[in-house]
Amino acid sequence: MATNGTGPDLSGFKGVFPANPTPVRADGSIHEEGLRAILEDNMSHGVQGFWVAGSTGEGPILSDQQRDAVTRIAGETTRGKALAIMHVGAISTESAAKAARTAAESGCAAVCCVPPFFFRPNTRAIIDHYKAVADAADGLPLFAYNLPQLTQVEFTPELMDSVMAEVPSLKGLKHSAANFGLIRDWADRGLKCFSGSGRLPLPALTMGAIGTVDAPLSLTPWLYTELYSAWESGDMARAQELQNEVQKVVDLVVMYGAAAHVCKAILSERLGIDMGESIRPNNYLTPEEKDHVLAEAKKAGVLEAPVAVA
Image (tube, rainbow, N blue to C red):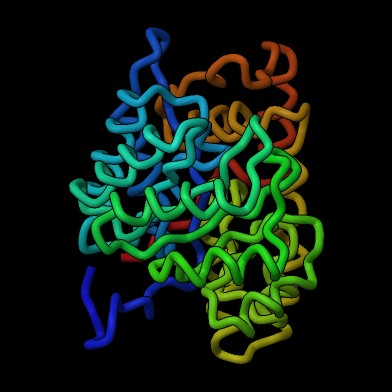
């Protein structure tokens, strides 16, 4: 990670960061060709980086060995071309710290982490968890993952202030909580705040978000990169058109409550590589549901990408 003389250079952490799915083979091994294909495809459409092994990437249910493979592949594939923010959240602090160490060794640009989950942690436990991850990450920027609907822990401004006071490498977050208005609070604290809503990329930018992290971005990266470019150039009319256009992609992803499998099915069809199914016990599509998803994706024009940029 380059520095600007006072710390890590964070200027590149903005824009479109797909939360890509994790392709797997029938035997449970990571489908390396599939993962590289997704990353290369998304980069060809101008994305600035990736949020690797998040919730749609099924990170919390990857084994340490699976996660290490994903980390290595993401670090190698994105090096010099995009920024890989590796999600290292795990049910144990030891596993999360191990993953952060691997991310640093593999050339990832940053790490991200949900707070401790399952057992309800107090503030001290949350801080200790993030300190351990930050120490293991060897100076990489750390992003929190505010996902209370799954973790049962919500970052309030008070909790964020407590963690920031003791974890100086905490530089930003992905905000996926229901309270959309907190995006402004995080920006006012100097945090690099990505919105976790692929449905509302433009409103989030107007509120101070630096970009968007979500699963739909991986399916149609061209829509989101054009929207972000229009926003940057001040073309609000075009940005609003694209804001309306992305709704259909989000509607596809949430079908049947099986986002990971939906994304794998659509990308399998679009890229011509079998990306596998959901990792159990995650929700999965029946054959009939998969056929319905692909039929809807075809009607929405999601299976045909425009010619990629050079």
